[in-house]
Amino acid sequence: MTGLPIHISEDVAEAVAAGAPVVALESTIFTHGLPRPRNLEVALEAEERLRSTGVVPATIGVYAGVPTVGLSTAQIEELSGADDLDKASLRDLPVVAALGRHGGTTVAATAFLAHRAGIRVFSTGGLGGVHFGASESFDESADLTTLAAIPVTVISAGVKSILDIRATLERFETLNIPVIGYRTRRYPGFYITDSGHEIAYRVDTPEEAAKVIEARDGLELPQAVLIANPVDPAKQLPPQELEALLTRAWAEADARGIKGNASTPFLLDFIQRDTQGRSLEVNIEVYRGNVRLGGEIATALAAARS
Ligand code: PSU
Ligand code: MN
Image (tube, rainbow, N blue to C red; front, side, top):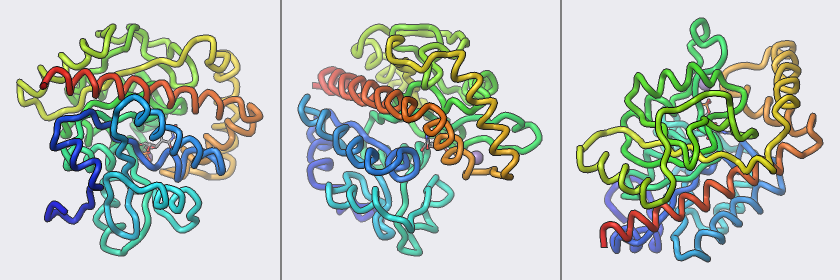
């Protein structure tokens, strides 16, 4: 529709053109992050909740080689149940596209496609970041360098719980990516409200977040703004339990020789089994909160420009 080799759904294209609120959603969360069948329920519920507040959802993924902004319900259904499907970060995008494959897009690839489609706000669960031992292994998510070059706003509950959070925050600083707590200056730890790390800034309303985004755009800065939105403390995993569990999860991954981009799915699955599914409920709660806040920020941004 745009002359670009990406497909933008009609309702998303119309909403973007009209300056109406739109929120991008990634697909890795339901292709590789959450177990079936909850993955599909969560993906469709996120869209439904946005629509019910007057926000247009744009779920992003690669369908049969076509990078798509605004996957249809049928496409989301198919991707959520597909077995032959790639985890598509930005490096993978041209390959997955050229070979006509299905792909769940990571934060990096989703941010890229959202920005190409003119979408300013993107809600996800947890970001990629620096893995423990990265100074030896060089395992750092491409989310970091990609977000340094794409001026979107990403709402997350922090980075994945299995990462080196201190090192990741240092990298955000180096890459000029502002990290702003929503109603807090404690950086959230995904499954837990407070990771134990302090961040420099907080905003207290969607309108305040929108002002930061407008200032970034006014200055023509190229990087993302990160809004860190903690899970309700009453709904978090008990923090001591998480620590012990992560230690066991790592030992198991090491013993099985699991590394690279296979670590996240393995560790998340371990955490889910170990908590008998409680981590899954927290994960879903975290995502719901980020989708809600993304909708509010997109609405505030639309109002600021109208
Ligand atoms: N957070 C989770 N589960 C995930 C991801 C994040 O709790 O599966 C995904 C996101 O799509 C993120 C990606 O962009 O993992 C980062 O993967 P890597 O570290 O391989 O770059
Ligand atoms: Mn990696």
